Image (cartoon, rainbow, N blue to C red; front, side, top):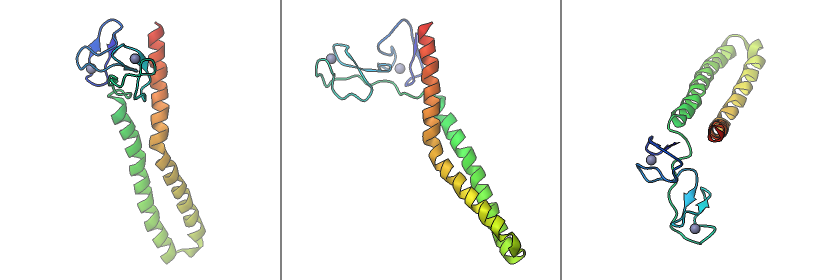
Length: 141
Ligand SMILES: [Zn+2]
Ligand SMILES: [Zn+2]
């Protein structure tokens, strides 16, 4: 039984192609059904250019999850930045002794922004690794 990430349906047995949308699973197959990697353009064994389209790598629930995990910290950072700017202006106007702390907080926030800019890439790698491990475990059973 295999699950198709393209049309979200199951095909029984050990199928090479989805019964419903005709996508192949994790490899590209030529008309002779030689398996090729996802990024292959030409079959490595017979030279055919007629390769099947594999289903998407990422399962349907993973994309919104990544989006959510990416958007939430972003909103928090925006809020924190706005608060900091106001805090900074107030510090400038009222208590200049705290200026150093305000600058430090600003630097910390800049660092968080930097981390955040790396986040989507990191999450994608982490989750797809987790997912492929789970799937491999499934396969052995
Ligand atoms: Zn399908
Ligand atoms: Zn081939």
